Length: 327
Image (tube, rainbow, N blue to C red; front, side, top):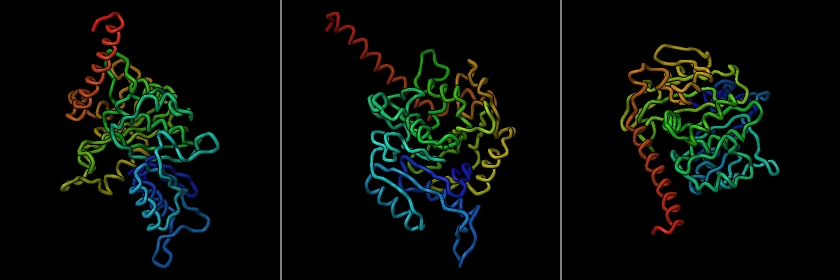
């Protein structure tokens, strides 16, 4: 799905900051072979005038890193993959700055957390849209990828659905909402796609694909696609069929509204109080009756956010009380 959406072209550079076993990088190269390759002695190969993708990645887990290296060798692909902690020590640099790529993809661990100092002490100017929440690193990964894109770069990140809506509609300020607002103000968000539930082995909850583009073809517009009903029922996990992928990618390429499936919203509309920078496709594509109803997963995430906020408020209160002599 991600490879079809990005549709990589010959010679492009593509980067995954937490590449796991390098599956997304391999899939993007296979996509290039499908669209530009030809049969040579029973193998799919690229003509001489079509160079392969330049593959780059980083992975923190040593055994998984080793699998990533083997995965690219098995597929007869060259890739520059490093072992290390991308958030604290990114490996792909151009001097003292982050290296820039044409495309970026990733599926980071959902709702990961890093100490706030990781963001505030960053020396690569990655978190200009805002300091992510201490509890959820989703928009931290998005900002790292964005900072790693060239002037016309595009990216897709597979995130937890809560990243699209946390903080919107609340009475107090929220870091994730503020980051979404900053990205919309810069006109970087291109599309958001809601996927079906039970697609992933690590989590039964649905995910969202967030597409950012530094050179949008449709300025100040965002395409929302609700693909939550598109899947092949399976056991133990559901799957996206080829027809489902073609339909979703077709809506994106044709940039069109389809009743019950997709809608185009302007950035100005997303700034209205009723929307409050909420990027959840289910809010805009389906009817009002469903759009205001949280899923169980979203409700659990909101409960966690409330508990974190309560703990922070309690800590601030006790700090003040201790300063005035209250034990």
